Length: 448
Image 1 (cartoon, rainbow, N blue to C red):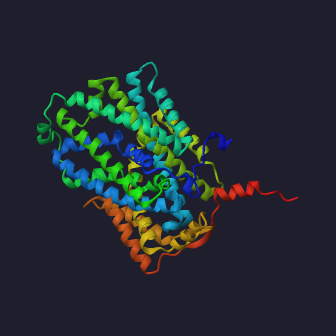
Image 2: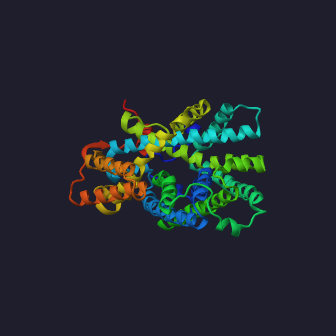
């Protein structure tokens, strides 16, 4: 039943060399993930409060920060072939901590999946008002769920179709709005809204995709080399930030508003609606995919039951779609934003453990030589949980600088210092059950 529904996609085991993809296949998905509707709106927000060149530098600084984090975590994911939440078991958090990360990823991304499904539903209702918004929410959410259930291969083909479509539709809709205006004048125009500083703009850019950077291993575990990780990250994030972000800046200067979506749909009609739908689809499949991976790890850790990724994806896709149709998730936005504060420290801790402290690095290396995962992991790492909490509070309450980056750096430095002092210690032992173990157990002859 589970295997006929969809692939497990190596949810709790290493991605073998034979299942890796070309860097272009991964890069297209990375570009699609970041060049989505939310990036369009981010560019408009920057343009409404900043000059073109200040917005350019904010995007540049934010993109550099994101690329450094994504490359560091991406290299870990590529080398180990494991998801973010699975890696966390041997990257500072232990089994229990990784379960918390899996739960946080699962709740956060399925929440955003539902919210973005609702956004697309409103656009589809404008195009075809014969169905109510709640019905479009269900149909869109279930359509994305069907793609994600099939796994990475299905999502790669979806990206090959939707990324060019999105770029062409944006070029058409934006071109019709900007064709009668001077780009030179737009680039030199003063912002129409309340002023944003360079620091505030950079915060919006870096903070807007920090969760995507943290879940980078979910994607790069399908890469083949460090060079592939670097290429696909630089290409995907740089183009995504600049192409879509700067277009949003110019539109905000042209229409003197940050409400880009309303302008697009009212000026180019159904093309604008397709921009919304395709732009949402390209990121929503990854919202659901990483949510499923996180919850598979959580269920396996807390309940001791290894569940199929496709089945979990189907269930949470149904839940997210129903909640989107009911309109409940719109009131969830503030909660999801607060939850996002917890993600940057995860990156800082994992990078510090893997490259600097290396408490469990030998376990990963030994298991990789046998093309498996370590047979056991620490159950708890109390020092890590304290560092995670402290760094999250810094991100929440310290307003100086970039909050998401502040918390990431604090987590990295604290973990590195505490680790060098020999205070990073695991308590308890948790045994690891992999997909290979289950398959061997299933095929072994039963006792007479």
